[in-house]
Amino acid sequence: MTLETSRWLGRLVSVCAVALATQAGAGGSLSGSYSGATRCAADGAARAATAPRDLSTLLLSELADGSVAARIDGVGYRGHVSGGEGELVRCGALQNAYGDEGATLPLRIVGEQIQIGGAFGRVGSCQASWTRVSAADPGLRACE
Image 1: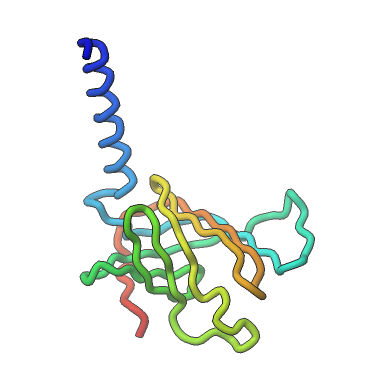
Image 2: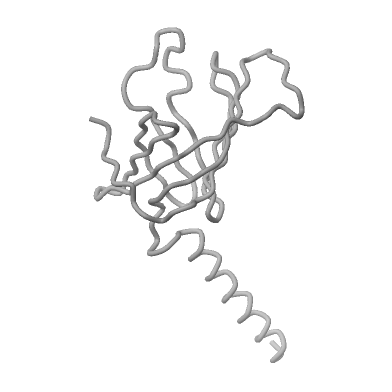
C-alpha cells in the first residue's frame, strides 16, 4: 500500500466515524423532537404529483429497557430501533374500520432523519420524514 493510499484510507475512516456519530446523535441517543411531513393516500385513490404534505411532529424518547416511546401528531407508539431500522407499534386499540392494519410502522434512521413508508392494507400507502429539531428528551413513557 502506498503512502497516498494509506492517507486516503485514513481520511475515509475518519469521515465514516463522523457520519456514524452524527447518525446516532449526541451521546448515541435518538431522543428528541422531530419536525416533518406525512402523506397518505387511500388504496385506489388518485393523488396529484404536487399534492401537499401534512406538517407533522414526532417526539421520541429512548427508555431504560432499550425500547422507544414515540408520539406522532399526538398518537402514542412504542417500539425498538437497532442498526438504523426499527418499528413503532401503536398504543391502544384502533377503530374497528381499520382492524389491525396500520398499527405497525416500519422505520429507518438516515442521519438526523427518521423515515417511514409503506402500504398499510385498507389504510392505503403512507410516507413520512422527520428531521430532528431538538435533542432534548421529551420524557415520554411506554404505553400505559
